Image 1 (cartoon, rainbow, N blue to C red):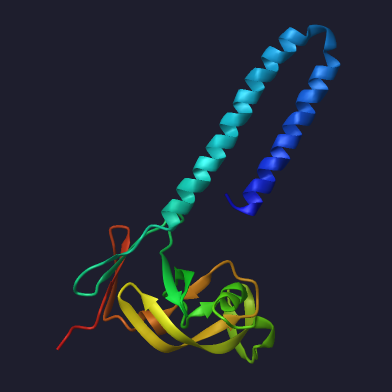
Image 2 (image 1 turned 135 degrees about the vertical axis):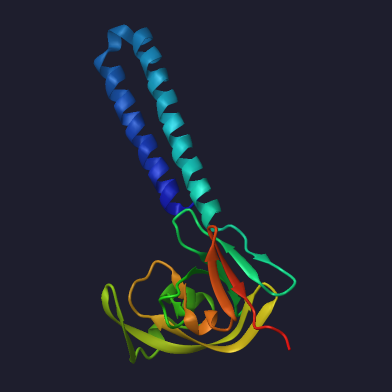
Length: 197
Protein backbone atom coordinates (compact mmCIF):
# COMPACT_ATOMS: atom_id res chain seq x y z
CA UNK A 1 0.00 0.00 0.00
CA UNK A 2 1.39 3.42 -0.96
CA UNK A 3 1.70 6.40 1.44
CA UNK A 4 -1.27 8.25 -0.10
CA UNK A 5 -3.50 5.20 0.20
CA UNK A 6 -2.42 4.66 3.82
CA UNK A 7 -3.16 8.31 4.66
CA UNK A 8 -6.60 8.01 3.02
CA UNK A 9 -7.33 4.87 5.05
CA UNK A 10 -6.37 6.64 8.30
CA UNK A 11 -8.55 9.63 7.36
CA UNK A 12 -11.55 7.39 6.59
CA UNK A 13 -11.03 5.48 9.87
CA UNK A 14 -10.96 8.70 11.90
CA UNK A 15 -14.05 9.99 10.07
CA UNK A 16 -15.92 6.74 10.75
CA UNK A 17 -14.93 6.88 14.45
CA UNK A 18 -16.20 10.47 14.77
CA UNK A 19 -19.52 9.63 13.08
CA UNK A 20 -19.95 6.51 15.22
CA UNK A 21 -19.10 8.45 18.37
CA UNK A 22 -21.63 11.18 17.59
CA UNK A 23 -24.37 8.59 16.96
CA UNK A 24 -23.61 6.81 20.27
CA UNK A 25 -23.65 10.10 22.21
CA UNK A 26 -26.96 11.20 20.70
CA UNK A 27 -28.70 7.91 21.52
CA UNK A 28 -27.35 6.93 24.90
CA UNK A 29 -30.66 5.40 26.00
CA UNK A 30 -30.87 3.02 23.04
CA UNK A 31 -27.36 1.55 23.11
CA UNK A 32 -28.39 -1.97 22.00
CA UNK A 33 -30.07 -0.65 18.85
CA UNK A 34 -27.22 1.81 18.25
CA UNK A 35 -24.59 -0.94 18.43
CA UNK A 36 -26.53 -3.11 15.96
CA UNK A 37 -26.78 -0.20 13.53
CA UNK A 38 -23.13 0.67 14.11
CA UNK A 39 -22.12 -2.92 13.34
CA UNK A 40 -23.99 -2.80 10.03
CA UNK A 41 -22.35 0.52 9.09
CA UNK A 42 -18.95 -0.79 10.16
CA UNK A 43 -19.36 -3.82 7.89
CA UNK A 44 -20.39 -1.55 5.00
CA UNK A 45 -17.40 0.70 5.66
CA UNK A 46 -14.98 -2.27 5.77
CA UNK A 47 -16.47 -3.59 2.53
CA UNK A 48 -15.92 -0.24 0.79
CA UNK A 49 -12.30 -0.08 2.05
CA UNK A 50 -11.66 -3.66 0.83
CA UNK A 51 -13.21 -2.84 -2.55
CA UNK A 52 -11.04 0.27 -2.98
CA UNK A 53 -7.90 -1.64 -1.98
CA UNK A 54 -8.75 -4.48 -4.41
CA UNK A 55 -9.33 -2.01 -7.26
CA UNK A 56 -5.94 -0.38 -6.59
CA UNK A 57 -4.25 -3.81 -6.69
CA UNK A 58 -6.04 -4.76 -9.92
CA UNK A 59 -5.12 -1.44 -11.54
CA UNK A 60 -1.46 -1.71 -10.52
CA UNK A 61 -1.17 -5.33 -11.60
CA UNK A 62 -2.70 -4.43 -14.95
CA UNK A 63 -0.13 -1.70 -15.50
CA UNK A 64 2.81 -3.83 -14.41
CA UNK A 65 2.04 -6.86 -16.56
CA UNK A 66 5.31 -8.42 -17.58
CA UNK A 67 6.59 -8.32 -21.11
CA UNK A 68 7.31 -11.44 -23.10
CA UNK A 69 10.48 -11.85 -25.10
CA UNK A 70 10.87 -14.49 -27.78
CA UNK A 71 13.95 -16.19 -29.15
CA UNK A 72 13.98 -14.00 -32.23
CA UNK A 73 14.23 -10.96 -29.95
CA UNK A 74 10.62 -9.82 -30.41
CA UNK A 75 9.13 -8.14 -27.38
CA UNK A 76 5.40 -8.33 -26.62
CA UNK A 77 3.96 -5.55 -24.44
CA UNK A 78 0.39 -6.07 -23.16
CA UNK A 79 -1.93 -3.06 -23.07
CA UNK A 80 -2.48 -1.71 -19.56
CA UNK A 81 -5.94 -1.23 -18.07
CA UNK A 82 -5.50 2.51 -18.69
CA UNK A 83 -5.34 1.83 -22.46
CA UNK A 84 -1.61 2.61 -22.73
CA UNK A 85 1.51 0.49 -23.07
CA UNK A 86 4.00 0.44 -20.22
CA UNK A 87 7.54 -0.89 -20.08
CA UNK A 88 10.11 -1.18 -17.32
CA UNK A 89 13.68 -0.66 -18.50
CA UNK A 90 16.76 -1.06 -16.34
CA UNK A 91 18.81 2.11 -16.65
CA UNK A 92 22.16 2.33 -14.88
CA UNK A 93 21.06 -0.70 -12.81
CA UNK A 94 17.78 0.96 -11.70
CA UNK A 95 14.31 -0.09 -12.87
CA UNK A 96 12.45 2.82 -14.45
CA UNK A 97 8.79 2.59 -15.48
CA UNK A 98 7.99 4.17 -18.86
CA UNK A 99 4.89 5.05 -20.80
CA UNK A 100 5.54 3.90 -24.38
CA UNK A 101 4.86 6.98 -26.51
CA UNK A 102 5.28 6.70 -30.28
CA UNK A 103 4.40 10.40 -30.48
CA UNK A 104 7.47 11.39 -28.44
CA UNK A 105 10.71 11.84 -30.36
CA UNK A 106 13.02 11.10 -27.43
CA UNK A 107 13.39 9.25 -24.16
CA UNK A 108 12.10 11.83 -21.66
CA UNK A 109 12.75 11.29 -17.97
CA UNK A 110 10.92 12.85 -15.07
CA UNK A 111 13.09 14.74 -12.60
CA UNK A 112 12.46 11.97 -10.04
CA UNK A 113 13.57 9.18 -12.40
CA UNK A 114 16.62 11.20 -13.44
CA UNK A 115 17.60 11.45 -9.78
CA UNK A 116 17.08 7.70 -9.28
CA UNK A 117 19.62 6.87 -11.99
CA UNK A 118 22.28 9.24 -10.72
CA UNK A 119 21.61 12.72 -12.13
CA UNK A 120 21.06 15.81 -9.99
CA UNK A 121 18.04 17.51 -11.64
CA UNK A 122 18.90 20.84 -9.98
CA UNK A 123 22.35 20.92 -11.62
CA UNK A 124 21.33 20.07 -15.18
CA UNK A 125 21.31 22.67 -17.96
CA UNK A 126 17.75 22.97 -19.25
CA UNK A 127 18.64 24.75 -22.50
CA UNK A 128 16.41 22.63 -24.77
CA UNK A 129 12.73 23.29 -25.44
CA UNK A 130 9.84 21.10 -26.49
CA UNK A 131 6.24 21.94 -27.33
CA UNK A 132 3.73 19.71 -25.58
CA UNK A 133 -0.03 19.66 -25.04
CA UNK A 134 0.64 21.54 -21.80
CA UNK A 135 2.76 24.22 -23.46
CA UNK A 136 6.51 24.68 -23.92
CA UNK A 137 8.78 22.84 -21.48
CA UNK A 138 12.51 23.05 -20.78
CA UNK A 139 14.68 19.97 -21.33
CA UNK A 140 18.19 18.94 -20.34
CA UNK A 141 20.16 16.45 -22.46
CA UNK A 142 21.81 13.51 -20.66
CA UNK A 143 23.54 10.26 -21.61
CA UNK A 144 22.39 6.96 -20.14
CA UNK A 145 25.24 4.59 -19.35
CA UNK A 146 23.34 1.35 -19.90
CA UNK A 147 19.76 0.69 -20.98
CA UNK A 148 18.49 -2.87 -20.60
CA UNK A 149 15.20 -4.28 -21.91
CA UNK A 150 14.96 -8.03 -21.45
CA UNK A 151 18.06 -9.45 -23.09
CA UNK A 152 18.77 -6.28 -25.08
CA UNK A 153 21.46 -3.95 -23.75
CA UNK A 154 22.39 -0.57 -25.20
CA UNK A 155 25.06 1.84 -23.99
CA UNK A 156 25.54 5.59 -24.04
CA UNK A 157 21.94 6.37 -25.05
CA UNK A 158 20.81 9.99 -25.43
CA UNK A 159 17.81 11.09 -23.36
CA UNK A 160 16.17 14.25 -22.02
CA UNK A 161 15.11 15.30 -18.55
CA UNK A 162 11.93 17.36 -18.35
CA UNK A 163 12.17 20.29 -15.94
CA UNK A 164 8.36 20.46 -15.74
CA UNK A 165 6.16 18.13 -13.71
CA UNK A 166 5.41 14.84 -15.48
CA UNK A 167 3.51 11.79 -14.22
CA UNK A 168 5.72 9.20 -15.88
CA UNK A 169 8.85 9.00 -18.00
CA UNK A 170 8.24 8.58 -21.74
CA UNK A 171 9.85 6.01 -24.01
CA UNK A 172 9.90 7.73 -27.38
CA UNK A 173 11.01 6.99 -30.93
CA UNK A 174 14.75 7.57 -30.41
CA UNK A 175 14.71 4.22 -28.57
CA UNK A 176 11.78 2.50 -30.30
CA UNK A 177 13.34 3.09 -33.74
CA UNK A 178 16.08 0.62 -32.80
CA UNK A 179 13.49 -2.05 -33.59
CA UNK A 180 12.72 -3.06 -37.17
CA UNK A 181 8.94 -2.87 -36.81
CA UNK A 182 6.38 -1.77 -34.23
CA UNK A 183 3.00 -3.50 -34.48
CA UNK A 184 -0.13 -2.93 -32.42
CA UNK A 185 -2.56 -5.83 -32.58
CA UNK A 186 -4.98 -7.63 -30.24
CA UNK A 187 -4.34 -5.35 -27.28
CA UNK A 188 -0.59 -5.75 -27.45
CA UNK A 189 2.37 -3.96 -28.93
CA UNK A 190 5.01 -6.06 -30.68
CA UNK A 191 8.55 -4.75 -31.09
CA UNK A 192 10.44 -6.79 -33.68
CA UNK A 193 14.24 -6.58 -33.92
CA UNK A 194 16.29 -5.86 -37.03
CA UNK A 195 16.52 -9.08 -39.08
CA UNK A 196 19.80 -10.92 -38.73
CA UNK A 197 21.90 -11.25 -41.87
